[in-house]
Length: 113
Length: 111
Image 1 (cartoon, rainbow over the protein chains, first blue to last red):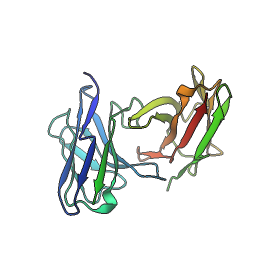
Image 2: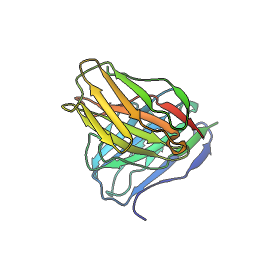
Image 3: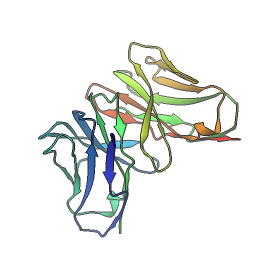
Image 4: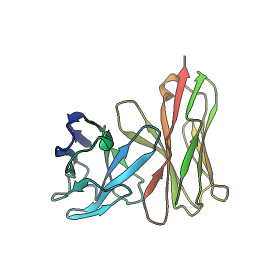
């Protein structure tokens, strides 16, 4: 099915562990984004990518690593998870950097204990 | 630093009412403003995009206005329906091309 898929939907991990959140899109969109959403806050951009092998930091990149070896995949890795990284993570894709035409995934709810 | 505020944080109204959601931003130098809808457990869906040169956009029962000089946007929903229940978010894009998001307004339409 066409669209953007995030996995897993839910994840519980322990402090200090490495965890990777997956994002796959079938639109062949150039741009992909990772956001986190916390209660009382708007979405905050973690990293984005303009194309394969091109990534850049967003507003809150510390503690996260991304890669984009293929256009359709944009995994987000928490190198050493902390409780402050408990959040809902959304992946999005777009043909334009400015966000119109965004397609969002359903999100991954990550809990760090 | 751009900040986006949405008021109210939550709103509950009877079905059939017309309603207005508000979004304000601190820096008027924006490229565009967008309204999104978020349903529980799902991603976000783009509703309306207003370019900085535009005053309003309409889609069905939705109308969004933009007043850059005052740093305000409103989303007007006509003849509300229970299916309109969701969280509505606005986001602005500025010179650094990043989207800055409000925290959202949770809307409940009572049958």
